[in-house]
Image 1 (cartoon, one colour):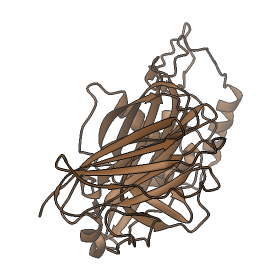
Image 2 (cartoon, helix red, strand yellow):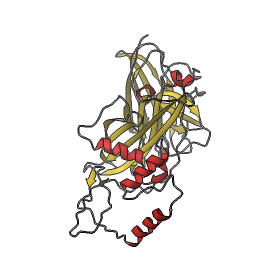
Image 3 (cartoon, helix red, strand yellow):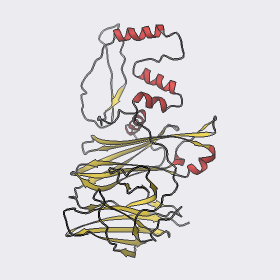
Image 4 (spheres, helix red, strand yellow):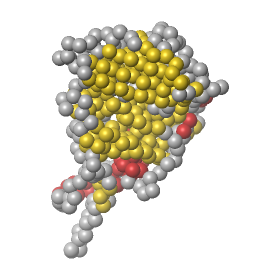
Length: 396
């Protein structure tokens, strides 16, 4: 692993990236295409989708005339019935649908129900998201394997607080299905987070589908890696519950978790949460201003865990948000304690804000085993705020 340029205990810019294994972003597609490509047998997936919605599949035949006649017959004798739900509470739970007929000679084609999820305007629910909703709707909630989820607070903007929802899980926790042809293993995980207000209603959702194939000769290297994902959201002041779930589609397993958010306004002056950094990557595109882990051509990959294995070389990342209308320069103090005893105190010169108005900084940390506490305090005029982070670095 390449070391970052500043020596331990100093503050500086992010250094060169290290090797990481990534899966390609999946483009947004409609439900039918996503359902088909998520299965090892696309035809069976399409058949299941058609039959679940009251239709049927035309496949593996050249004699399509009677089947098309059946389609036209259903179109000519088809009536739709709509109704307003009794409850308008969009809490992510499953609502059953049952249709009873008062006369004979009719046939009902309906689904068994739906998940009460608000329309975000981005894309309809995908089959992978539905699998996550099903796990969250199960009592008791499943725990098929371990994973970590966490929420990091960043800036206030437009009366809302910016948060990043992060997932972390060892790839070895996923089922890797051997593929006879091609000497590969297939993995498929999907991540889902539902952000709910105090009434239990969904105000935002974050999801990620991660299908992957790994060749047998690379499996031993890949299986010891961590699967990580982060996504930023904006929330008005208030209390929120973040319900998270990871689905292992190859193993037909799922695990769930819950994170709490207490979003208090900070009035345009503040300090982000302190984040342990796993490594840093170069960006192939300009930094996304909506992603707090991207800046100046770099992307920070955080540790979600605070219990690090021997040999880890962590850093601490945070962002200062000074008041632009305050002419007083911000003052930063970083204190580092080890096993409860003061180790060092840093009082670096704070640089000017970047184009976003923030000042992203990174602190390199000692690599000796022990329990560490980092305390970062930022002051500007009469305003002062502090963030702390405690982590453990295990011995060999």
